[in-house]
Image 1: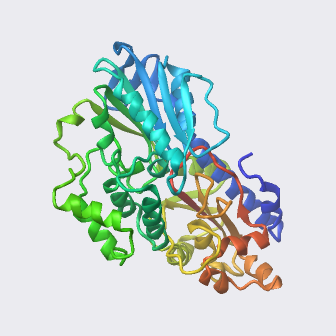
Image 2: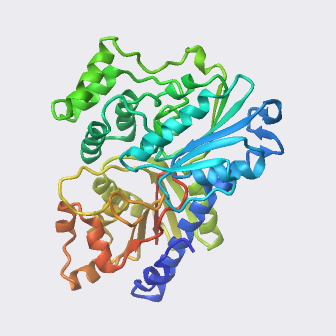
Length: 444
């Protein structure tokens, strides 16, 4: 079972009807995660020794050796699926899951850092580069890319502590993932298409997307994709968020040297280095949402997918979804599903994340209604908490007031986890082994 506290979450409903709705929401979220499990989506693209996609098929038996490298929250499951499908000579995988195991002993597993890179991230990157450097033109490297790869796969131009400080500042000010990864690419020696410069082998990237609209250039900071961004873009972002004078001197110096042409920018679209590089998206949040929709219909609901590209401040989006979506509920037994990735501008010192904050922000809007709402991080990790998200219903505010909990106070402190922990309404899964952004489910 995906949710460790499944029974408690269901029993928190104050009526049989609310308990059933809570049960159904949890089952839909479980179906969404099942739909994007790495082993499932990777196996689907293999047919014997061929990788088969909608537009083409690649025969892997034509290469002298087949290697795999991977980084991200889904990398272990993806690597195991590849090893189950074809013979792999050697590989290196970087994950944030210390319990990760791959049955093929020729695959080395390295534990890196997330959301901030650490020494393990750098050690894993160096092992990957060493492996790539030994490959010939007749070899193929399958690169397994998923969300979290930006921090797990790291070879920085600047001291690690300076990189960590810069990324932490950006994470706290509500920067978008595209903006964040633009900075990462220009402080790196491997991101933004630079990885492909380290090998003569053919590269085939299998990508599980964790970014709205599936931009290959930004997922895990686009290590095998041409990069449209520049050092000037990086400086502009830092100035936009008023961080240019707050970042470490080494970071500022590196970006200025890039702008002045003393450091080569990331490789662009027409660079011949990409002639033997092939990138394929094999799963995204739309697939996860379809899994939830299929489960909703199985349970007898009229299911609607509103959008897969939710962005913006979590506390604003929460109220928007309730005020906008509730009007579309014309009858009972209706489910509305949305997906994407919101942001949180951190002003307090609490524990939480964008999903819990989104649900917390709409407590008053759903009070007294028959609505149940949940927001869930598909990787099982929401912000700096141990939860994956939260669930609430029209009776949650009453329960909170009985415990002297003021939602506005917890919002001000960015302490959404503290609020829902007291109510036992946090969604607890642990790492799910996949990552395709967040999913919101609303049921009436």
